[in-house]
Length: 435
Image (tube, rainbow, N blue to C red; front, side, top):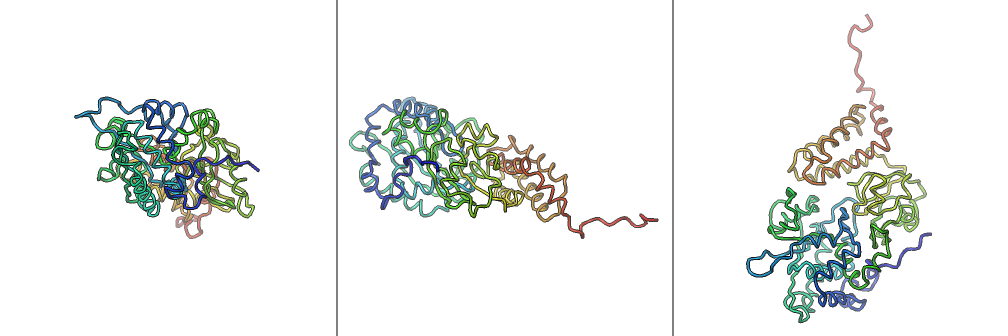
């Protein structure tokens, strides 16, 4: 049995009324930002750089480096304001780590926002929450009100002369708004579609001003780094992927849920923590980071689930949405359901994604009705090749991942569907063939 680490990010989740400011302060909350406001902003950026914290939203970009990209020019009249935007638009299939964080411990996110704003010299933060997540929106908005009432937000925080405001913004439920530039367009009141980069948000983000966009889990980690220090944070995880991580384990396991463990934990260890495979039916395939990451199989049980380990094995860590499937599940069926989602959520801005996901779904549905051919497999791979790296944002790339990896590891299942042609579909011999 794997010994779980002492919880860090989830340590308050089991506390009575864990979401209240009273519980948060009783368990050490709102102490880190007091220390931070006494420090130089550049020292905080360096601290986060030294900690090795990497973005928990999927890309894994070094957080301190992203903060450092914000131009720190004059702040007087005529200078553009700087903004912090929190990406809480958790829409990746299988991902459910940010919503529980906002439900159980919203003040850790708010404290992280205050520290981050101070570090990048911003005075405004917008938290963009997925529109369907009604309860987290309400709880987070209430937590913001509590922080204002305590004097932790607003004008002249704790007499330091520093001002900061936080606004909770509800999206409309579009998966594409999880892409940072589409999110910014949505925040500005426009249709959520990805922007051409460069320019990058660090120089031309929200309202064409310097902007940092970070994930909920990333910013909720910041108060712990300020309190514990970079060496303490690096003591968890791996050298290049330090710190704890919340793994969302779902599917055919005995106890699905959120598991906090050091980066580099393997699926074998996560399965032990979840009580093993449900009903003892063996593992067939799984996703390390949501449906937009290439599939893994039972052969990958011991792959370290950190940014480097997942990539070396041919996939991505993504959002650590570990979806587990046993031997009863058809791979082509699962791939078709994911493709259906991506086709529906494509914003339509670029041709490869808009048209490619449509045709991929048509082929997969035809195959699952036993009306496909072996040529359809190569056609799908060709379509995926025309989408990958050619779509406007990562949605198109992600849509190809389950298809290409599914065919790579389970090609025979796709071939079997092609072989099972209904008798009525077989073409009759032409008249006179026996003459």
